[in-house]
Image: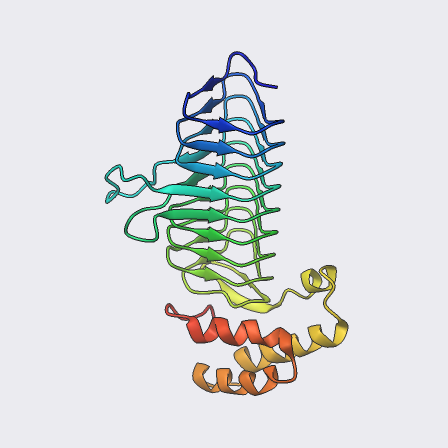
Length: 256
């Protein structure tokens, strides 16, 4: 399962069933979970922990030092969960001591070709980054979010769960859960109703989320007033609780 032409450091740990292609490089401090496939010419540097059944395609760079001028060689790390697919030439960097020192990628995510996950980002589960989508440092991406091709997210932004960011979006503020944004700069264009339906949200729940969007974006209320109104609705619609919590925690402001 390990091609003899691969370069695997003595300090790397590979579980049973790991497959490594020719000319791949796996450095010291890397732990690779069972069933993971590392393609030819892929590079994984440590400290990095990869879970089970991941697929790392050719020329991907995983766990390399962060692109941050403040980085001084500190032993920061990258943690990746299970069943992720990281495609050709994608880059995922370790954290910095200016933050928690760790970049985290959850499970069941798809990072398409040429995507970039910068230092100190946190990606949830079932996220899709389409080709060449790029995350600046310190970004949080919620579960089931989708970023279209060439979407760009400014550092310290938060991308809410179940949102959809259109191709080429330039995002410099937080994107609330369930919302669809697009453009340069990004603007809101309704909710991700198709995605919610695919994930099993009941029709009445989707309707209430759509009504919540109207409160937030169409009512003319100030953000604080909209949050208060949504808090009342959340008492009867549990799906709105993550939206209210996200809005209350926003420090950059939201795409509005």
